[in-house]
Image (cartoon, rainbow, N blue to C red):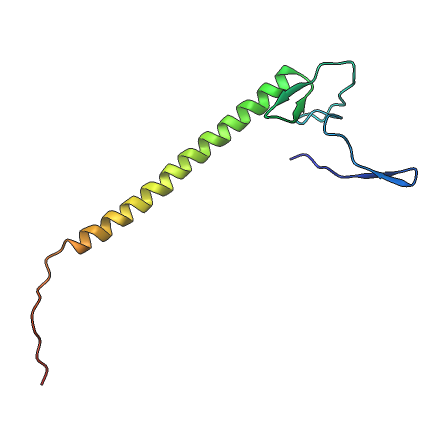
Length: 98
């Protein structure tokens, strides 16, 4: 992730503007060059940097969905084991203890 540290200059603290540098490679973005945006307010210096971030995000989302499905599968197996326990034959009746 990108750091949003402020810096001290001339008696004042300055917060860098989010369009000052590329999110991926941190290259300075000049006012006379194109800025490629992704997901609202994430700036990139080139289509290549933006595409690399898109591919990274898609891979992370795919990995998250797979791990989510696996954990849901484990939960479903535990739930079906509970159901099979409740479907077992159980003797009922009165027990007298002397």
